[in-house]
Every structure is written in C-alpha cells, then in structure tokens.
Image (cartoon, rainbow, N blue to C red):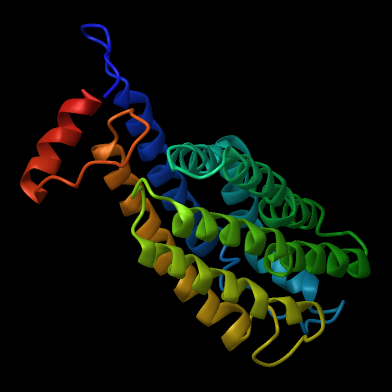
Amino acid sequence: MRPFARGENPKRELWLMWFAVLAFYQLYTVVFFVLTRTQPPGSPSYTAAEVPGWFASHHDGLLVGLALIFVLGGLSATSIALITYTIRRMSVSRAFAYSYLILYSVSAVPGFLFICVALTAGAMRPERDPRLQQWLYDLGFLSFSGTMGVFLVGSLVWMAAILLDRNRVFPKWFGYLNLCNAVTEVVVAPAWIFDRGVFAWNGLIAWWINVVVFGIYTGVFINLLRNVIIREDFGTGPLPDLPPRRARRHTAAAEVA
C-alpha cells in the first residue's frame, strides 16, 4: 500500500464519488418514474393529434422534474469517473479505461440529455404546431431508448477489462452480467422500426425486460463499486479480500469521516 501523510484520507474522495453515484440514481428514478412520468414511456403510435394531450397531462412534472436534471444531472459524471478509476486499477491496458470514459461521456448526450431538452421544449409551448410537438416527442423517446449502441460498446469494454484483469478488482461473474446488459441494449434497436408490439420503445422486450435487467445490473455494480473502495490499497497488484460484513461498516464509516 502506498504511504500517505498523517491525517490524509485518500479514500474520502472515492467515498464522496460513490455517494454521488447513489444520489444520482435515486434522483434519476424519482424524476423519470415519479415526477415526469416518462417511464414507462408514452406510446410510439401516438398521432400528431394525440401527442399534445400527452404533453398537457405531463406538463408540470416535465418542467419541474427535468429542471432538476438540468441542475443535478452532472452527478452522472461521478459514475463514469468512478468506474473509469476502477478499470485503471485493473491489470489491463489503460486503453480500456479511456475507451469507457469517452464512450459513456459521449453517450450521455443522446441517451440522457436529448430526452430532457426535447420534452422540456414540448412542454414549454403547448400551443406549438402538433406536428412539431410530435417531432419533439419522437426525438425525446427515440434518443432515450434507441441510442443504446454506444452503451452496448461501453458494456463490452467493461466486460473485457474484467475478464482479462488479474488484480481481482471485480468478480468474473460480473463481467458476464455486463454481457447480459449489453444484450438488452441490442434488442432495443428495433424501436427505430416498430411503433407497436414487443419491440416498440414501450414494448415488453424493448422496455420492460430491458429496465428489469438494467435495474438489477445497476444495483449490482453500485454495490461492487462500494466493495472495491473498501478493498482499495492504492497498490498495483491484486486487491485484498473483502473484510467480514461487520468490519466493512466500520471501515466505510471511518474512511468517510
């Protein structure tokens, strides 16, 4: 373990990032599922005459909820940064970490911000031409659900890094869970073609199965990131084993303080 000056707590920054990740995903869930009610998504089969009604019924939630995203959405960067840090801690080339960092930084624009901008624009001016409202509606949900290709590559990069790593940063089974997540990002691609059925952006495969897998995957990697921080020794070799459960609580509390 690399020596540190007295009073220096190098893990404090990692814990701050981890709690920021936790806060972001809680914010994400509340905003998209409760405030804006954009998840589950609206129907892709809505006509130009029906879309203004959808915006009207979601008006206040869209403006308030997405305003929170514009203010606090930058917390999403903490997840990317912390995962990139853990990949750099692996025995693999740093190219994996930089590839992951770039891929997910780029994907945040179409996969996260476009829906916020498009739906906010639609909600702000309900008197706009219904065809333009429909265009904003389609842009928002297609960008959110249909641009998973970048996330797909990012998941595969993380998977490859885990499977090749010799420093035991993550368990190997989590590499295969990344593959499962990547598969769900493939099956959502037909959302660009279908506006009804299981492959539509609100369909059984493209949304319902996808969101269940993503929810499990997210919960798992947040917990594993916590374990990595507990095990981190700031060396270059394999990480030590995880301490017993009771000791973990005391360790985490002491390192945050």
